Every structure is written in C-alpha cells, then in structure tokens.
Image 1 (cartoon, rainbow, N blue to C red):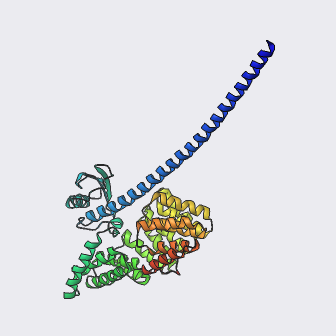
Image 2 (image 1 turned 120 degrees about the vertical axis):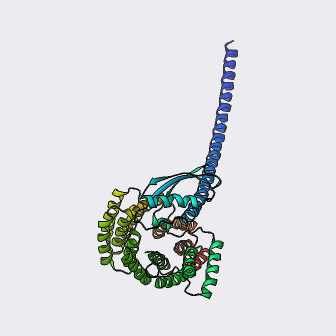
Image 3 (image 1 turned 60 degrees about the horizontal axis):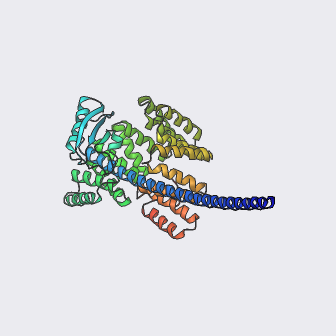
Amino acid sequence: MLANQSIRNCALTLLLSLTLCHSLSGCREEKEMSAEDREKEARSREQRREREKSERAAHQIEIRRYVKDLQEHIKSKFHPTFASAQFGIISFEIDGNGRPNRVKIVKGVNPEINRAMILAVEAARPLPKPPAFMDDPVSIYFSFDPRVLHSSSRFDDKDRIKETIKASTVKLQENPQDKEALASRGRACLAMNDLLSVKQAVKDLSLLCSLEPGETKYLTLAVRAARRLGDDKSFLELSEQAFQAEPDLENTLNYIEALTYRGKYQEALSACSAALKKFPNDPDLGCMTAYVYLHYDKPLDCLNQCERVLKIEPDQAMAYAYKGDAYTTLQNYKEAMQAYNLSISLNEDDEFNYLRRARLNNLLGKFDKAIKDATAALTIDPECGQAFYYRAFANAALGLNGQAQKDKSRAASLGYLLSTDSK
C-alpha cells in the first residue's frame, strides 16, 4: 500500500514537473512573441510618426506658399493716399472659395490708412483659395507692415512674371525711358530672384530713380535690388539717398545695414544710436544694432543687445539667431546651438535660421544634420546658393562627391562664391 502510494506520489510529482515545465516553456514562448509584437508595434508607431511628420512638413510648405500668395494679392490693392511710418493689422475669414468675410480692424492707425486696409481686402476679391486641409473658414490676421508688404514673394506665378517682363521689354524697345515700363520690369525682375534678373532690376530701377529723383518708392525698390544683388557699393549709395529723402524705419534699417556691409561700423553704430532715440522699442532696430556689434567683432556687446531686445519682445527669432552667431564667435558651440534651435522654433519660415545651424553643424562635423538643415533652407528658397554650398561641403565630407559637385555647381550658378562664407 505504501509502495503503491509512493509510486503514485512519484508519478504525480513527475506529472506536476512535466506540466510545470510545459507551462514555463509556454510562458517563455508567449513572452518572446509578446516582445516581438511589441517591437513590431513600436516600428509601426515610428512609421506613423514619420508619415505624420512628413505630412506636417508638406502642409507647412503649402501654407507658406498660400500666405505668400495671399500677401501678393492684397498688397497689390493697398493704395493709401499718403505714406505712414505706422502700420495696422486687420482680421478676416476666408471660405473655401476665397471669399473674405468679417473684415475688421485689429490695430488701427488713422481713418485714411484704416479705410485703405479694408478696401485692399475688398478689392482683392476673390482671394486665393485656402489649401483643402485647412479649416473652413480660415481665420487670418494680416499685417500691413511695409517691410512685409514690400518684400517680393518667392512663390509668385513665374509665367505671369515672365509675361510682365516680356510686355515691358517691348515697350522699352519703343521708348527706353518709359517710366511705367521701367517700374514694371524692375519689380518683375526683382520678384524672379535669380542673378541675371536682379541685375536687370538694378539697371531699370537706377534709371528710373534718375528720371524720377523725387519718387522715394522707386529709390526704395532700387535699394532692395542692390541689396539682393550683393552690390555693397550701390546698396550704400542708394540707401543713403533713400534715408536722406525719407528717414523712415525701413530706410533707416537699410542704411545701417549698408554701412555695416562696407565696414563703416562706427558710422553704423552712430546711426543706430540716433535711430533708437526715434524708435526706442522697435525690435528690428534693436536686432540691427546687435548685427552691427557682431560684425564689429564685439560679440559680448551683441549678446547684451540681444538680451535687451528679448525683454521687449521675448519671441524675437532674430535676436536668438544673433545670439547664436555671437556664441559661435566665442566658440561656445553648445549655447550657439541652443540659440539657433530657439530661433528656428520661433520662425520656421526663415531660411537663414537653417543656414546658421547648417554652418555650425558643418563646423562640428555633424554633416548629416548639416545636409538636413541646408535642404530645409532650400525648401523655403529653392534658389539659395548658400544652402547649396553648405550641403556641398557636407556631402564632400561624407564622401558623396557626385552630389557635392552638383551642389557646388548650383551654388556657383546662383552667384554664391565657394571661397566665401555667410555674413
């Protein structure tokens, strides 16, 4: 009896052992499968995030294009009867068909300017249709800051611009001093933004200024053209004329920048000091002062000036950009990178923010990141020679010589000298 019970106990123990082993084996398989499933799920999540990121990036590009197009439509209809150093802001909604509604003044100037802002929106009907993925209606806050309005859009209809250039050229062949045709071709060539077109814009607008010496609007256009061409001598001469004729904020900033380009730092700082008395809380002027200090090899003064600007406007992206430049000069690369990251987070539409970080990434040997930043800059401005140059440098460092040579050639064709660096 005891023997049989002992046998049964042994058999039961063996059975329990086998069952336990089988159970543990099953648990291990389940754990292994669960780990594999978790890995697959993690990969799926990562792929979804990448798709969402790509989609967001595509949407951001489309939104930037839309905003530029909207700016051009309204700008062409804004015709106040007199110039004003101040600017206003209006708000309105746009439905899916481009119809503006609920137009109202958010920041007024005076009755004349306020009326001109409202009429500009009404006269621009129908406005460009918003991208399909945006809300319907889209709420818009539109600034009539002249520094924004007068900047040429990179996303104009190139075919329309070429037709304007062609039609104006025909008129100028008949009459080389046709003022309207010179102005039309000058603006159109400036909007084309390639090297040859900008050179033509400088010629047309300079001639126009000599024919209409009292028209500061033509002089301001000529200043922009010379600046974009990189003709520092003409930029200074024209900006000084514009500043003397009308010392508003835009002409003041251009004049200070032109002095800096020519290495006239003491004169530039004197102009900054005088302008700050007139526009004490203007963040752009504060940033321009920091810019002069930076080029005058005074990075600590630049940093102090940037801090003053950020007290006035904490989200001023350019102040962080110049902080990054100053820290780079001081070889404090960690602080420089943090400043550039902040600048980009505050203004993702400025290609120069990405160029700064691309340059620093090249300096630090982070060539993959430099390529990404240079490519991001090209997404904003497809004809940015500096971006092609930085990308060429990074590609060459990674041994991608074919792509590097393509980028170098493209940079040279856009007028960016390969022996130079950014200012």
